[in-house]
Length: 389
Image 1: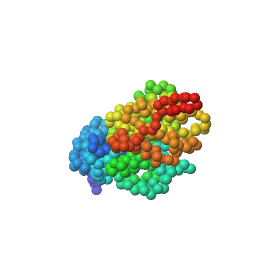
Image 2 (image 1 turned 90 degrees about the horizontal axis):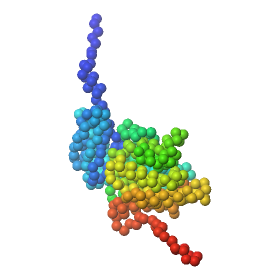
Image 3 (image 1 turned 90 degrees about the vertical axis):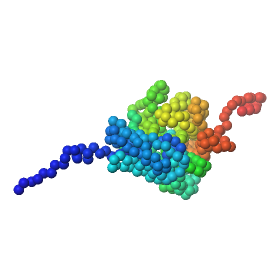
Image 4 (image 1 turned 120 degrees about the vertical axis):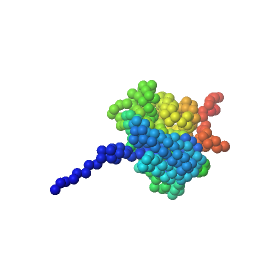
């Protein structure tokens, strides 16, 4: 008896094994918000030189894209006025990927250290004031949340294949684990502008500003570089590591602007902070290639840093005020009156979010009559025993 052996034709094997799966960036998921009335990028990976078609339901448009020799592809699509939900599909031959429940609205990047990262549920023995009321009122289909996972890298990475989070609709469950400052900021914008708002949190507790800068940007700051490149430091404290892992993957994503809550980790080198922050913002704006987008940041609160007589935090606040003058299209939300001397994570995050939103309303969205600027020292005169500021 003869045994017959079936041999799969070589060309069929080639076809089967050369069909690479279409992959989208992991920051592009169901439930996301895309910046309205703009040109946004949709990107991912496929076979080298593979042709793809991106279809967007909000304008029924088809956009062609071709992967490069490494399989990277980018499609530029046009968004319309705020609205949704919509769908987006990417097709190549018989392969397809579809995203659903997409909204068009306003997108803000929210970054910094633990005070930005601090969720509505708070930290152990460090609550957010009014958290329960915030959670009861959290359900809102027009607010979408994305948290970047903690990723620190020595070199820049892209967002395809990396383990990031997913866009979530605001609810008691999702908001509880999300940045209090970012969520409350989004809520202020959504209520006033009456459009969908998406917020991306990319923050890591204890991180210095040096960690959020590219290698080229921090290179001239020799003192700061020396202090933040010690191999013994945890990765989130080391120069460039968070820029590489948590900002670089977002550079294709269209944003309206950024809010920033950081500075506590830099009280050790307040003398450098204004220039460092200004350089970081210039770095981000250049790499996002979206112009001088708004950058609104939070003044650090008067925590005593184990020494009630120390001037370190005061010097950092002074540097932050100077940074505001160095950074075009920026503004600082003061928190000198809502901080806690012995608590580095103030529970009064609603006031912080409102003050950031006042900057956005006044300077970004042109809302008339909103005051956003804090009183600023101009001069002092002394006569006898009276000082007039």
